[in-house]
Structures are given as structure tokens and as C-alpha cells.
Length: 96
Image (tube, rainbow, N blue to C red; front, side, top):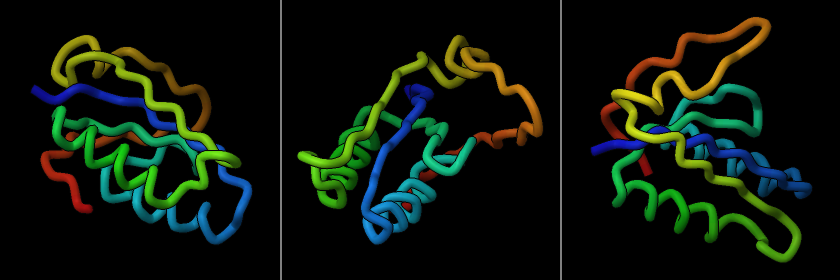
């Protein structure tokens, strides 16, 4: 079962910020520059956390991972976008 996650990060270093954004593109869809919506299996969530831990300096940067529930039920409708929203497609694969 896949759950939908809201992943936000705060990275001050420009090089690490770009690396983080590129890595996150392999896990989900960008809702805003540092905010991603990711549909992940439990194993993929572990891979995501490992990838972020590898890139980020955890003494200076931070990431927030919020589990919004199953992708095919509550998780799909658990957020609202105001303004110029993009339709988020369903993702079946994670590219690491």
C-alpha cells in the first residue's frame, strides 16, 4: 500500500538545495519549489529518508515528512491548493 506524503525542506546552502530538489523529483511531484507530494511504499519512504540524510547537513538544514494517509483514499484529498494549482498525476515508480 502506498501512502501520500507531504515533504518540505529548508536548505540554506545553494548547492545542497539544488541537490535536494533534483533528488526529490525522483520521489514525487513538486507542489512548490521546496514542497513535494510523494506517493510512497514503506520501502520507498525509507529510501527517501536515506537520500535526504545523505544530502542534508542535519545540523543546519531540515526536512519535514508528513504522512497524509493512503494514496487511494484519504491521502488523495487531504490537501487544498489555492492559486495556480497543478494537477498531480498518480506515480507508480520512484527513481533514486
